[in-house]
Image 1 (cartoon, one colour):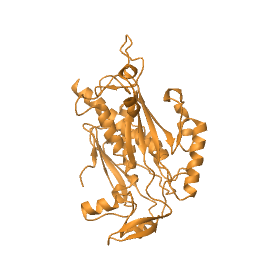
Image 2 (cartoon, one colour; image 1 turned 120 degrees about the horizontal axis):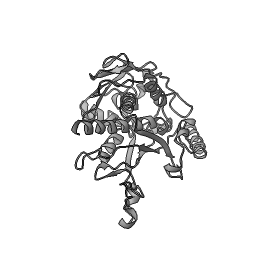
Image 3 (cartoon, one colour; image 1 turned 120 degrees about the vertical axis):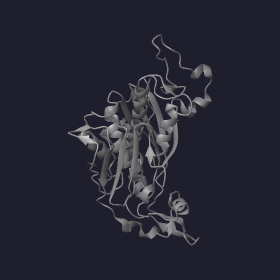
Image 4 (tube, helix red, strand yellow; image 1 turned 90 degrees about the vertical axis):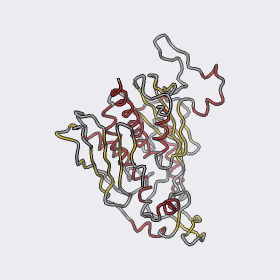
Length: 353
């Protein structure tokens, strides 16, 4: 299976399955001499881990990271950083009923068609549990670019949206509620909606907005390696993501050029920022902001039709521990992938400067 490595200079390779012994990764290209804050890394893992509230999967995993290489006396050595995250709470029997069937909107069918074999326990490699390794990589990337601030938050769940621009939100409130929405009145509505959806044995999707601040001018290349293209690839590689837009996004398609153009100030900043901090594929020093759309989780705790490996359509009910809405736990994943992209381009700029 190819495609397990992300990045150009700063590279993250992940391995492991949802119900295997452990997940893990190798980070290559990390500069030497960075003093790592291991408490911060573990805190990032706590934000992503299952079982953290009543509105997420109740699988209990501590997600404690064990570093194997590339670090000496708390500092990076410049050699590959290897790490593992042991799986401690697998309940593989929860998936025995899908051994011979393919769940709708999962990767079950295409995996078996492509590889001739699949790990049906929790989806194996296609499980969102793979993203735990990304959060480790992102936590280290954030420490490479410590001056750059990355904040992601839930901006919608189903039909419930924050009706304020991100500039009017207090990012310090993101972690104050289980939905990770900085607008507390909207957060309460979102949480109640997710709980109601969960009672129905159903699931719901939503969006995450990410804001990157203090970005230097000049990250990105103007043709195939545009900064927003790499951010888009990073976000679309996350499980359940169905859409990505940055800056004015699809709303910009409705505007006239006279409305959309970002006029300059004398210092090179712009009066508006519909460009989303990126022009010609290169960061311009303004805030980078984008929105990521997540579909409803495909596993339902209610009956639905599935395809068997004998070509029959049967009724089957989902079992096990699943998120009724994935977006609250995806917030640190979005931040991690954004950090990996920005850190990669930051290091590339230093190498070529």
